[in-house]
Length: 89
Image (cartoon, rainbow, N blue to C red; front, top):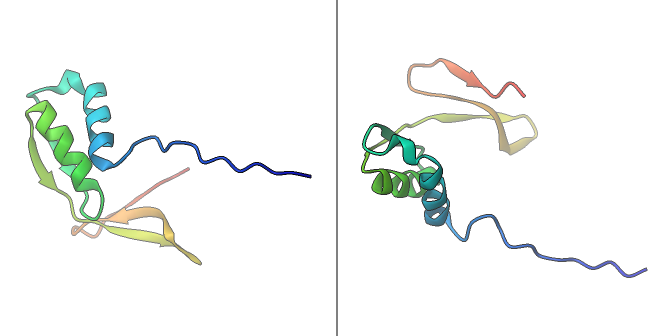
């Protein structure tokens, strides 16, 4: 049996392109919003969205609540106010 492995193109070339594409979908908010980004990955996306929408940019610092035995995945987050927000699904 022969198994072919294909490498599909990722949805985005990089985080800046992801922000560019998302900004198109958020165009209705142009000049009427603040964009928040999460450090360690989210800021390049948020910065591109803010730039394209002409919006202010700020950071939200949160701590991921990891799934036991899988520290890369998370089931929620907690900000500095100490209140957790869970990803219910």
